[in-house]
Length: 328
Ligand code: LMR
Image (cartoon, rainbow, N blue to C red):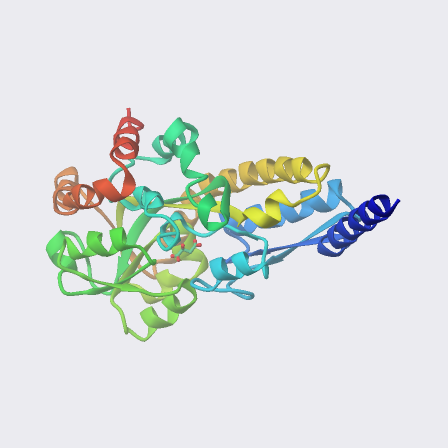
């Protein structure tokens, strides 16, 4: 009888603690650093709305855009502390947790978004989703933004034009090496500070997708944008392993479904906005878009490609080979 009582008490305690962890409704905080009218902002809001439709009364998703809740540098720590539950940082922001994702930062590795898709959906890309599990972070899926361009105070056409100039980068040593390869000075800074750094000319330029250059108004304070398409800006939608694996078994599959659908909506927005935002920037006449000839672009490839070799071991040889093969 004694054993029975102990067991009943133990079961009650487990049920009670589960109920406390997942008080009804479960609140999922989704924090990000960009504007709402961007691929990531649109995806996050679509996820919130789909969950509201399908898990009414059971789960509420709260979206915090524009670094409102947590900015770069703090958001992954907050995820591990349980202060936020879903994030979608740029792939360049995970260096502290794994060197493997830096494959995505190698300059001129992927020729376009289709190549990236092929790599991400292949065995190597899929395995990378789990590359931070040991650190308590689970990669739920990838989300697109677009190819990166270089904006600047001065016209940049050749690698020499970038020499000695300060460019803001995300927290990635590969991105640092990429700018160092052309003699420029990379500066790791949070996204929320970029506009003011550009406006006050504390830095000369930055690299980003058309969507971010537009939605953050970088084009209003940068007289030149060179259309280099030299790298990609993509995201990893992540949660903490403890939060995600601990979700009730009847809820998690529905959330996964909502995630899949909202990512498809975000990816469609990424493809549309890439062209639209570029056009709006061009029409604004606030900045000059510099396009490169094949020979000019080749000079950039030649200057930056040695970075691959430098990081080959860190990102994994087989990953690099698969990424190269995804271009065909
Ligand atoms: C950046 O920091 O430049 C971007 O990663 C911001 C974002 O999330 O798109």
